[in-house]
Length: 179
Image (cartoon, rainbow, N blue to C red; front, side, top):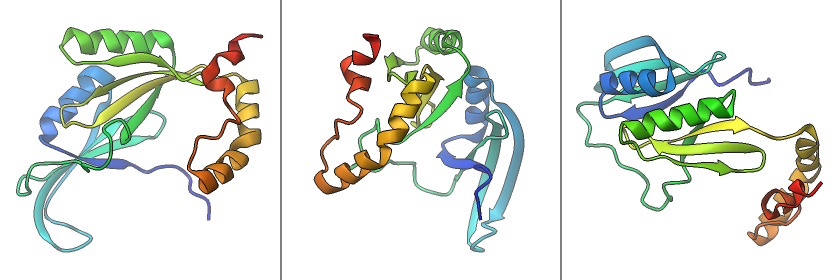
């Protein structure tokens, strides 16, 4: 078996309508489907919900559940806020910067652009508290080749030591720019 693609990724939201409108306004995601039930199909549990689906481009779907009978959303207090996020790719730096300006004009705090060597990113939160990243690829074929060559060695070293391996230090020390 080979996975073909991610069918959809689902998160919880505070308000389905607000979420659909926000993603349409700031990320140009088209609202493609709504499903509402009073009972969970997989478990039979009585739990009314609204499940909305947004077009994230190229067959990718981002979905949200509004659960009005459940306690307010929370997050894992042991996981830093920067860790769990959804990264979305844009075509060009101009798209990244235009979105940043639009978000900031409406008072939404944006971090970045951050240079990750392989891509540039901005970070911000949606109205539900989910951290989002917009990324624009900047890697060269040579960079990708070098990283592919060391990925297993890096993983093995990390597994043994739980310390950051230095196989790809060039990504962070600026030496990749010295050619």
